[in-house]
Length: 629
Ligand code: PRX
Image 1 (cartoon, rainbow, N blue to C red):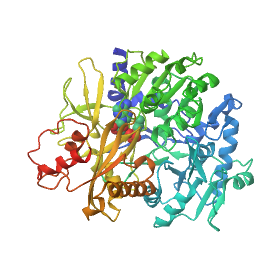
Image 2 (cartoon, rainbow, N blue to C red):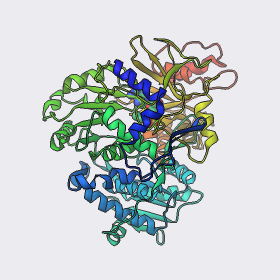
Image 3 (cartoon, rainbow, N blue to C red):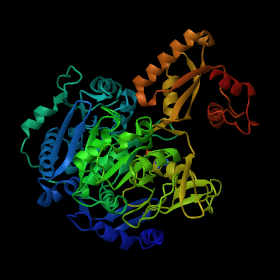
Image 4 (cartoon, helix red, strand yellow):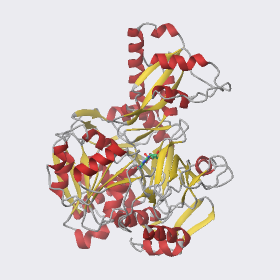
């Protein structure tokens, strides 16, 4: 473990030299003048004065050596298609998409919002934005109109690119009507919407606004769009994520720092090299998709698999079939996917030749020990649990086999990744805690290259949200509890805030509460995350009715529950729909009116609710208990 420690030590104590070396992994059109400007903490600017471009590093740079090698492999088990794009093909498509955006008036610094499923055109559009210096903001396809409208209002995109629809487990999911509804809600909707029509969900184009992706692409076939060289700190994208408030935060990423961080991670974390094939099962709507479906592998000269489908269709061997078919070297997925596979015949794990596969990386939620053990034994491959966040952009804690091969431990995402000065600190005074002491996982700034630069349009909120929650010390809070054991292995012990994690999807309970409250029968509600064997957590809602008679009968309650679920699904999307909504006379609160969420969660998980001396009305918790029966 010494090598990993020394490597990490150098990354934070000899920062300039360390990152100067790493920066040589990418192409700089203009060299940077200094490695780091940290004159205005906690804001960090990496590779100051350097000019580069994500699209150039992902595409053009590899043309001399890899023009005819696969770069983007699209597999859809939803629409039964497979298509392999070489680096040259990607170059062509990205140039056409860039020309299309330019025709619509998109230039450097303008935002483009994408609302698209896992289709190659989504990746081409992201790269096209990067090429012309536009800032993309991809909204996860599982989100619905209210979520979308909020993001449109915050990002103020010049153009939205969407598809007619997607498909999930064989069922068509229309995207266009949700977008139309969101544009109706938005305060200043963009002038143009480009629709990539897959022929899945018929729609009526809006005259004068909606444009057809395929026709525009045809018109710009063969176009060559020059690369816009961005200063390293200029934004590459905005990705919205949930926190404690009902308003999502636009995580803003830079350009140069991100490219360097990802390029280095391809070697040190994934032990990979150019020419490899990388398969990440996440979605382009999440940070894992941005970093390890699109930018990381492509910048690292690897082929990336874009998979539209689930891990169990047509059967539970599909992931392994693809590993064999495309000679996958690195697989990146989420614990939930493995828990789903665990319900299938274990023989499926051995059905295909997995000899090319080096390791399986899992992230996004806690990896429980039985799940880790099952997959590790079933595949006979190293399983690497890695911990990070939308904000960090790449792993904070992980084994780093490209630095040193150190044994992993089930339940632990191993050690801090180079660049992250991670600490376990006391929530009450900010001091570093010793071995086996539970505290908040914090990062001493500057945050490394690749981490968020700020919250889009709101520097103040960035500082307030992330750097003031630990008293007495300006450190970045991850809002996760953790501890380090005596041997230096880190463990994550759940969130310190009201964020929940449903099947690897990060959701804000406050946003769900606002949606439930928007039903006119509801007086107030509390949404909490409750442990679930498959999804990790599910959302449970407890609601107080304006008129209790509305749920007097079991049928009435069921009907109302269904209505509210549909409402949440319509506003936020199916991922945010509570698993259950229960009606109670009152919510358990403290005397000062704060909802006792932890006590509610404890009751739902049949645990001891702990100290209830501050509770206003002891009967309220009883009602929660009864409502579960
Ligand atoms: O609570 C932690 C949990 O997911 C949160 C971040 O979610 P998101 O912003 O969607 O980014 C996911 C990037 C992988 C964290 O604050 N989390 C993520 N990975 C792990 C985890 N919890 C435990 N173990 C992990 N490996």
